[in-house]
Length: 231
Image 1 (cartoon, one colour):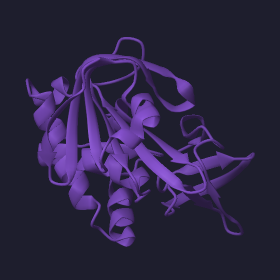
Image 2: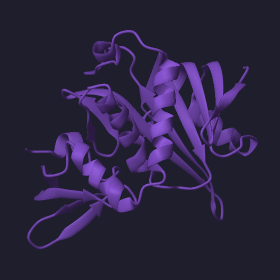
Image 3: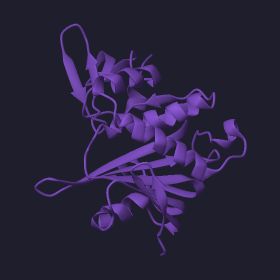
Image 4: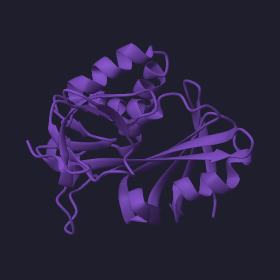
């Protein structure tokens, strides 16, 4: 497998591979071999993973993983960077917590964040997959449905430039933007058989829900948001 260094985009060192099992898995195993921050882009991914280890095979979609030595607010920045680039192209997208991108209630993009620890953080990996075309096996859309023909590399470049910009934002600015694009904030949520309102996202990417008495900060492992939204 030949991984090729291409160029730098701002502070990101860009690498490319034609085919790989998973960009996230590769960076998890070889994070110490790359400068930080780096981005690994693949044309084809044969054993890509989503949340809950769901398999996501892909050919000629937009597949890339970012490698950091800091956590930042990647749970918020990753979906925002895609949403803002789409908005610049007059495509209205929304973020379904924790970090999926939807257009017209159909999924366009997913994000998988994996952190490596020993006694300290060793690396944070942000895997991003964006459909170029819609998929037959689940309700989805692709960028071709809205943008016409385009270059995958150019679109990824725009996302990385926006990502770099957002890394410099204060948390309050990021949360304000996230709320603007969220399709979950303000919705009624069933959690442990009680009804709450989703009110915000905290600095760890947890969903904040509350009623008249209690407030909870819940992780994406605690709840299936798709099954829990009631309005």
